[in-house]
Length: 256
Image (cartoon, rainbow, N blue to C red; front, side, top):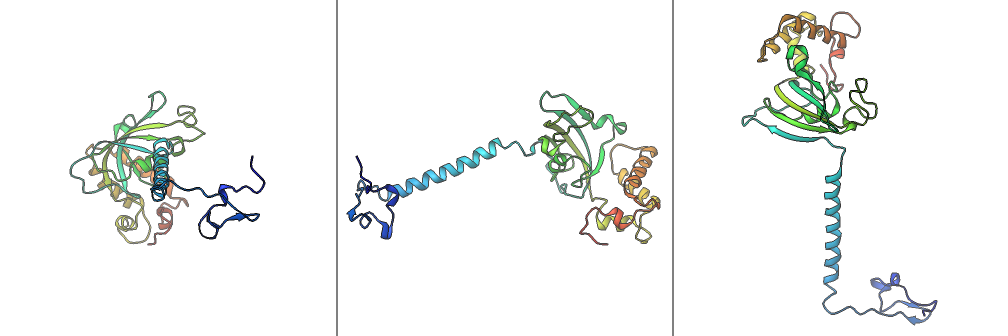
């Protein structure tokens, strides 16, 4: 039996509240005498278990975290002088699969007469997961990436159920070319050959022709014209037949 004045372990502490000084109701509290040699060992033991628990928790968190884009490099060229970054113009092929059953829902090789896709990296022209997965890639590199729903089509899905809600996606990517993006200040000035601070169809068509000539696979004139029309459809907001710096520039902090 213990009295109402019995001491509790929570009353023991350093300094003025140490076991040798703590009293209640005029009675000296009981003192637990440690086994010789344990005074220095116990703090080290506590620190050990604290750190062990911390690193274990960190490792478990990293292992089970599903909300990240997982990247597997299948092939990377030995010589890689330029890697992709936000704003670069990329030329790539990629195939898309549903992770749950491996069924293919997209193949870029079946579109545009088999030509690789051109898009600007990091500005939302592809799903967020691909923008993340294709950073720091070399021309000629191949990757396999797993993209969770939060970086793909989320709870809504896409393409009339072809990609169901909350679908994890797998893409196999092959990057062919990395060029300076068409949305940089430098490129705007390069395209604007007459320096009138606006881009005409003639100027952009000339720029596209030079870029397409770098592609290993030849392109016919109709494809280049289709790309040109698509550029103006998406960027010539006032319909005046020219693309102004404001219409052209996706980076709000850039100034011409």
